[in-house]
Amino acid sequence: EVQLVESGGFLVQPGGSLRLSCAASGFTFSTYWMQWVRQTPGKGLVWVSHINSDGSSTRYADSVKGRFTISRDNAKNTLYLQMNSLRAEDTAVYYCTRAISDYWGQGTAVTVSA
Amino acid sequence: DIVMTQTPLSSPVTLGQPASISCRSSQGLLHSDGNTYLSWLLQRPGQPPRLLIYKISNRFSGVPDRFSGSGAGTDFTLEISRVEAEDVGVYYCMQATQFPWTFGQGTKVEIK
Image (cartoon, rainbow over all chains, first blue to last red; front, side, top):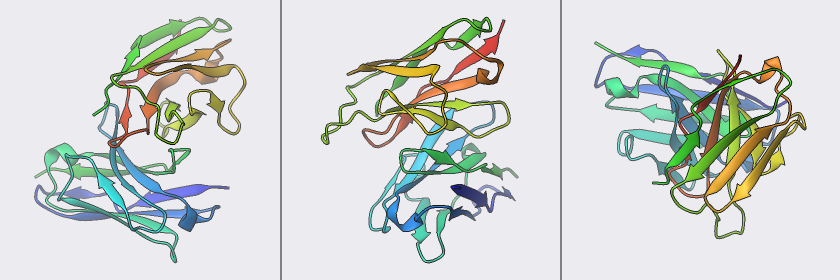
């Protein structure tokens, strides 16, 4: 069974940093590209970042470029999102998704507030 | 960025009756590899989204055959042949043809 389990969401002050993790199981993690997608409370879905299967290629939404870094450890079957210089508008539930978003985790909540 | 526009934004439906949601993209979604990466997702209350349909018309594993997708170019449709209570939630179309991937605003389906 494919499982994606996010962790690392927390309450952080503006300007702070967080690292989100997504533990994958039930499939060969190293052969799939992965994404982070976020959802603001009561709002829709926004794609954040993408990484290819070996981690050599990454893409970012303009709103997070230069502040967020996506990475992966295929030996640990884990996807990461390093978030720096956090802003109030980064407050959201962050989901990791596989490939064309065929599987989603349960999400981890990030709140940026003083 | 490709803008995805869904209609309607709200759809009260009667159990057992059909429902239809449209999604229009601001640019064609045909990828250079010949595929059109248009998906439909359902988010039930309190749950993460789940994939229903991918590449316009392919039902994902475990998705009931009352769900069907169609379309081409910039116009796409999700149809539910007979709505059941478990179909309540917000439906999103999503394009993964071009970065940044983008989503429609969502269509809330509720029972009358």
